[in-house]
Amino acid sequence: MATKSTSRKQLSPSKKEEPRNGYVAWQGFVNVYLTDKDKAHASEFYSGNGAVEQAIEKALFAGYRITLKHEKANNTFSAFMTHTDVDHPDSGWGLSERASSWWRALQRIMFIHHVVLQGDWTSSKGDNYVDDDTW
Image 1 (cartoon, rainbow, N blue to C red):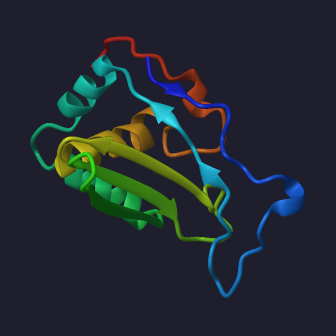
Image 2 (spheres, rainbow, N blue to C red; image 1 turned 90 degrees about the horizontal axis):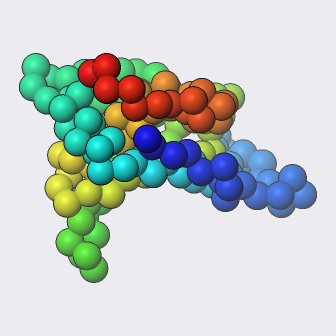
Image 3 (tube, rainbow, N blue to C red; image 1 turned 180 degrees about the vertical axis):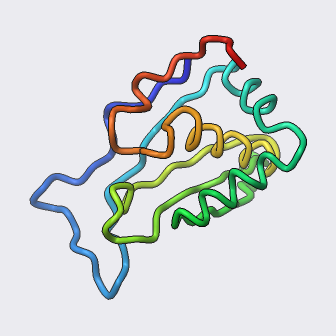
């Protein structure tokens, strides 16, 4: 079962940044750790028929920014998501996932966003995610 970190790297209330010039103030990362079984399910869940593309499009239309980066030091790829709307509950939070290929990184971050966290990073929805083998 995927686990969502309860120790988000949130700034203390006295150190929180205020949004400046339309930019979202950084709050920290929401950490979700996938098991090997979850990683396999992410690949299965988004296999074929443009499923990853549809998940990406849905996230983009909802105001999320998705970034990919190659990590030279360990030859992996990272996918990052943030929300661009200052008033959105996920504003200022980041979601990331690393994998051996850019495609797997995208599959997994979409799986975390849409399936594990159900598109709501800051509530407790993702805390109830259970891999029940009903794929």
